[in-house]
Amino acid sequence: MARRKAIGGLLAAASALVLTGCGLTGGSPPSGEDVDTSGEVGGTITFQTLQLSPVFDDYINGVITEFERRHPGTTVEWTDIPSDSAARKTNADAAANSLPDVLDLDTGTLAPLARKGLVVDMDRAAADVKTDFVDTAWDSLSFGGTSAALPWYLNTPVLMKNEDILAEAGLAEEPDPASYVELVDVSAKVARETGKAGFQPTEIGFPNYLLSLGVPLVNDDDTRAVVNTPAAVAFVKSLAELQESGGIPADTVSAQQRSEIETFQEGGTAYLETGGSRLKIIEENAPAIYQQIGLGRPLGVTGKGTWLVTHGVAVPKASKNPATAVAFAKFLTSSANQLALAKRSSVFPSTTASLDDPFFQAKPADLVTEARSIAAASLMEGNTIAKSASVDSEFTAALWSGVQPAILGEVDPERALANAEMKLTAILEAR
Image 1 (cartoon, rainbow, N blue to C red):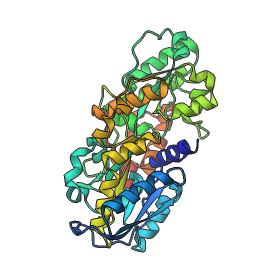
Image 2: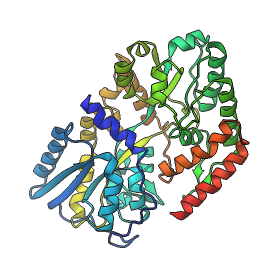
Image 3: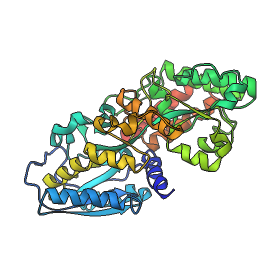
Image 4: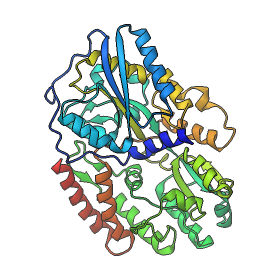
């Protein structure tokens, strides 16, 4: 339980943490200036992680010990902080020019450091290992042409389905929906035949729906929002129709929205797209529903791709020992070390060699191993999509707020998206 809480909480925070408009003022050298990372590996560096202690103390200390053994004369001083304080602490450390030499960060907290040019470009400093990583994982940490961190651990979803509800709806023998458009269509049938909802749209999920449908969300240089497209209008219109028919829960767009996992484990929805680690939570909280679960490939595999959450390992340009810091970041994210972490947790590694291990490729023996295999296949087959780091919690909240009236049938979808696009562009311009 403690292990799942540590990693599960960390990944949940990964898409929620944001550090925007905080006025980063510290950091050196100046933005755009290169840092020489080719020097001798030695001396002392500081390394900071998010909410991995005490569950993963043995693992982290083992990695540090092995790095120090391979590089005599080096010392790695490790600190661990709560994930919910990462944005505040990172902002304060950057302003004081006291960032640790190596940082474990989610994309939301990493983004302002990258925009200010405060972190080492891994495209240059770690070019020799770039091909080791899943392409979309590497791309998800790119900001304006700069790779701001090395990918570390990932999460990507599977499709969970309540087979009892689908049987009641006459859908037991039908193929799984392979896109969000198909999910809406199937959900309408579930509502007609059972009086239950097909799925529960969420604020945090909505950008992923659009991205999978080919809606870019932002332009190439992250200066303008792009959400008012024909595909987005059609999708929001379909959600409004589904809301009216009962195909999504009545409180989906209310201020008191329940979590989608809570609704699913209460038997209120037929489908839930989420990380496989949620299976353990459902098994503990709702064992009867757990017995009804079947698994399928994530939505979006026939479109632009399914969502991906990435944690990265960054090295600030202000590090006084950048050569050792980059060497440690590369060692920490090596295939062997990533595989070892994955075997101790519910996260996925970001290197293809790790994903090719029998741990992920073995024939599934239960729901947990089946979910692991499905998600690993998505990563290996290139069925994930990198979301721009500009699409953070602030962006996501504003987008969801903008489309809620349209889903409720109070505003025309095109008008709602046009207004949302203007507000989102203003947010991007303010950055």
